[in-house]
Image 1 (cartoon, rainbow, N blue to C red):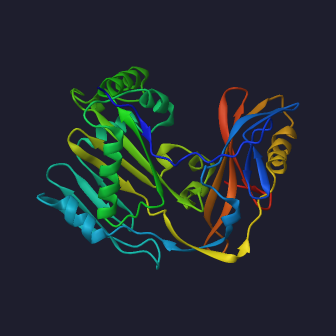
Image 2 (cartoon, rainbow, N blue to C red; image 1 turned 45 degrees about the vertical axis):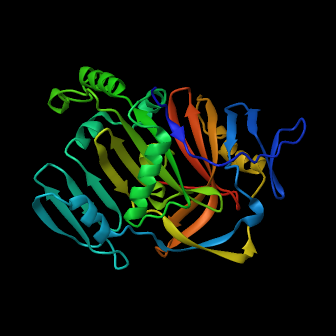
Length: 352
C-alpha cells in the first residue's frame, strides 16, 4: 500500500466560542476565518495560528546565538568509505561564525560545512533539475504516494540523522511529502518540452526512484520561526518548503541530500517583559490601507494570514526576535506578493 504525505504536528487545542468561532489566546481574540470585502481589498483567509500557541507565555525574546551543526561529526558520517577527490577550507562569513570546509568525492557526492551543513549524492542533481521543492509542484507531490516507507518512519529517520550531526529537533516541526517517480518523470517531460529544462539534464530512468522530501521549521513560544534569510528580500520571504531551515531528500537508496541552513536559534526569554498582540482587525487594517490606497484598477485578495516569530538583523547587525503577521496577497487573480506586519506595534515591516 502506498503512503501519502504527512505532517507531524500537535494536538488540537482551539477554543471556539458558540456562534462566533473565535480562537482565544489570553486577552487577544482572533477570528478563525477573516472574511471582509472592501472596495479594492478582500480578505478571504483562515488565520494560521498554532494550536499550542499561548499568548500568556509570550515574552520579549533575545536571540543568544545561531545553532550550528556538529561539523566534525557530520563530515565523519558522510565521508565514511568515500575517496576524496578534492577538499579545502571556506573562510568564515563573520568573526562569530566558524571556518568552513568542503569535500568532493570520486563517486560524485559532495559535502560542505559552514556552521550549516550540506551533503548531496551524485543523483540529487536530477531531483534539483526537476525542482522538487518548487511550490508550483507542491500540490501534485502532496497528492502522490510512495510505497517503500511510511512517512512517519521517514520523518523518524530524518530526525535521528539530524540529532546525530548536532541539530536539535525538540522544537522543530518536520513535514514530509512523497516524491513519486511517475510524477517526477511527468514534470521532467513538461519542463523539457516547455524549455524550462534541457535534454542534457534528463535522467535516463526514474524507475524505482521514489523518495520523500522532508523539511523542517523551528518553533519558539509555539510559533514558527521566520528566519533571517527570509528577511533579506521579498523574493525570499515566501512561506514555502524551499525556505525551510532543514531540507532532506530520502529515497529508496537512503539519504540523497541533507541541507541545514544555520538559521535556527538559541533564544532567551525575558519573563519580566510580557508582550501583548494587537487585535487582528487592527493588523488587517494596515494591509487594507496599503493596497486600498494604491492608485490603480487592480483588485487584491488576502489569501493567507500566518502568525510567526520573526528573527532579523537590526541596524547594529545584531539578531532580534518579535512576533509578526505574514500575509499573502493575490493581485487580479494573477500574481502573489507578501506583506509583513509587526504583531505588537502594528507597523508594516518593509523588505527590499
